[in-house]
Image 1 (cartoon, rainbow, N blue to C red):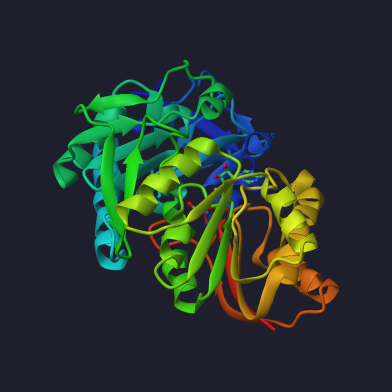
Image 2: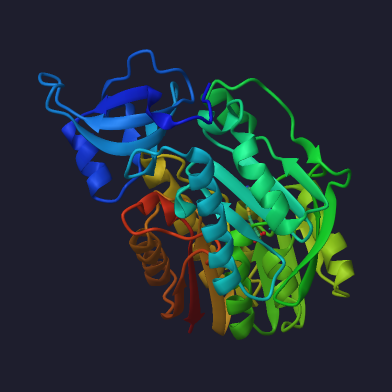
Amino acid sequence: MASASPSSAFIVTISRRGADRIRAGHVWVYRSDVVEAKDVPPGAVVTVQSGSDRSVRATRVLGSALYSSTSEIAIRMISRAPVENLDQLVRERIRAAIAYRERFVRDTNAYRVIFSEGDLLPGLIVDRYNDVLVFQVLAQAWDGPGMRELFLPELQNAFRPATIIERVDPRVRKLEQLPEKDTSLVSGTRSSAEFHMNGARFLFDALAGQKTGAFLDQRENYSAAAQYAQGEALDAFCYQGGFALHLARVCEKVTGVDSSRPALEAAEQNARLNGHEIEWIEANAFDLLRDYSDAGRQYDCIVLDPPAFARSRQNLPTALRGYKELNLRALKMLRPGGILVTCSCSYHVSAADLVETVAAAAADSHRIVRILENRGQSKDHPSILGIPETAYLKCLIANVS
Ligand code: SAH
């Protein structure tokens, strides 16, 4: 595993295609573009150079990177120059990430402090929920000896959190061939917190329920949706009630639907905390939307925020059929002048794909759809030009007549 000492000890040579990708501003190099990674241990910090298969002599140093021995993304660049002092680099990146949030994040004490590639710390995620910090490592290198000491003290100093929690995604650890472990407290004793966003209050518990925290990337879309909503609202795929709670301030009646009982239990606690009465229904949203639209039910606002349907490019067509079905049902149920809030968090579904899908649903349902806002993820999930994967969330808000 990696050591925190200077990064030049291990060298990875990549193909011209890989080098071109880095020069174009991306930070990933796929395994198929690795020409040579001799004796490079899993999770090492490496010096990256370009060279062709035939003449490795004609090389050029491209910078430093985190290496994964198992992921298809073999290399994640951390610097376009060889890094001599990794400790300093990580500290500077964390400080820059915090300064960016201080400048651009408003009305909340819950936000993503470090967004992996979006903050040039690929494979590292840190979320703040009031006085609880939650981090997650998604790449081998951050799991290596000495690596945690690179970022935990800086976060500790900056936030003085009551608790630091490591959240584990078992699927990622398996893919990166890291030893299994559970989500656990790294410091402090409390795994829960109350936080606020846009004036609404929420409970967070890292060790209860779905253990995924809140969808902080939707925070700005919640208040945008609430600007337009009125009357009766349906929040499909509501999770712990992010949209529903915001809509309850402006709508007469709000119904939230999710297939997860623990999510709905958390949603009800959140509703009570805010003094709202919201109807929660445990159901498959596809079935419920079909039944309700067949029964002629109507709403003034419908939110569709399903989980990522397209996990890879191969299942894009199936995913688009799913989005079409949901949007078609929703459009049929909206009263004239109603508001549709429709989201996709699949990177593989582009903004244009989503617009096209909703347009097809509009044509099939004979509705006229006017786009009020074409939105993305909150600013604490920065997307970097040149790294398209950092922009994944799409949220359309439309007026339907
Ligand atoms: N809108 C939420 C986030 C939604 S995440 C927020 O802003 O917080 C997607 C949610 O869809 C999860 O809570 C998951 O439990 C739920 N889900 C997945 N498949 C479902 C289905 N077929 N029917 C209803 N809910 C589903």
